[in-house]
Amino acid sequence: PNKISPQRRVSCTQSHFPTISATMPTLNNGLPIPAMGLGTYKISGADGVRTLQLALNAGYRLFDTASAYGNESTLGEALVGVDRSDVFVVSKLGPGFHRPERVEEGVRGSLTRLGLEYLDLYLMHSPVGMVFGDEGLVDDGVSPVDTWLALEECYRKGLVRSIGVSNFSEAQLGAVLEGGGVRP
Image 1 (spheres, helix red, strand yellow):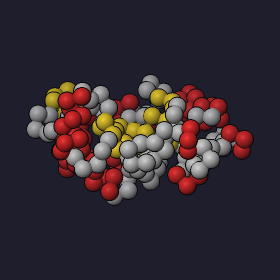
Image 2 (cartoon, helix red, strand yellow):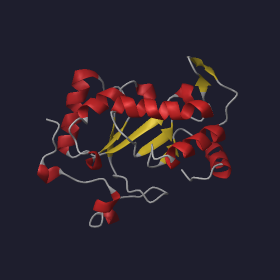
Image 3 (cartoon, helix red, strand yellow):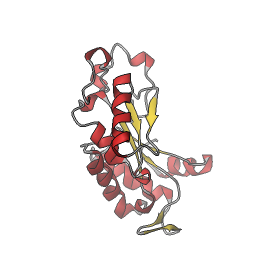
């Protein structure tokens, strides 16, 4: 059930897009991204794995998850046996990993739970970081720009193919654009 039927196989690597690139949007770094995807919030367990495998067979290629959803391993299990170039995986930084010294740990945790060597797109889930280990407390000692700069390092290391933000206001995005080097 983890194999994608040949007639539904669509590669998600840049080198395979010459004939379909006009129909696929691209991110600011030129990476093509499928126009439609499946959000995995609240999908978990054995039923979740089956749901995601059915989605793969139905033609879904972009899957959006997050550390905060607690289901990255469910998606990882559904992707076992699927050619990595056939899917585009998005995940998001957990709220307790916003301090620059913890960002790479957050990224690597997602990679481990997903069973992947890289993520196609990794988002800062929120502009607000929480205290590590007590995610009910806002961490006032970290700015979104500092977190962003640490995400840029993960991008440069090849852990993620692109980076972005989620749930940001226009002003918060503006601060990242002004203080960062890589455009979301």
